[in-house]
Image (tube, rainbow over all chains, first blue to last red; front, side, top):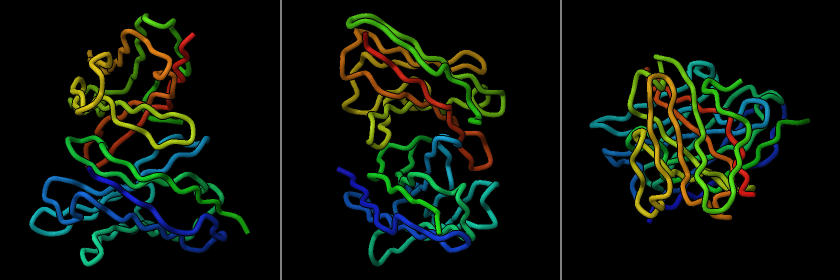
Length: 120
Length: 110
């Protein structure tokens, strides 16, 4: 059974960097059939796909166009986890952030969610 | 504003069937057979109930079914049960390594 366990701070100051980690059990971040995604949910923006990392003979990192200048998703093979960094946050980045495993062009396992509030 | 359009609410009595629609464009729903549906109970993470338009993951009751016609996908929940009361979201692959979601439908079991 795949399980995803998220960790990271719930409060970030404006202009700073949001950092979250998603630890994987029951699968591998280096799997050649899965992608490892970040998705957020807010009342104003609904569900929004942010980006992913996946291994297909080499690593690929893919991002939503609207966030491409601010986002980084990276794998950590030594710890079997992946991370999200979102730079220069504003209050509009306040949301519940989820990590999720992707396969068959859908998201079949989700982390527990982390409410991140951007406020001074 | 979400890329895919869903009705904000739907309802049905126990045992009845209810269908939720999800309208996109030829660039997402209409262009790919990669529509998925998620059930979300309050305070919980979304749960995949349909993928690939009409496929059910292991463990999802066959009361859940999906279909698509043109730019509109649909989720039907048959034999409604109290535990089906939740928010439901559709999603579609939109090309260019991008996914879009609907705004969600609150399903009430009367």
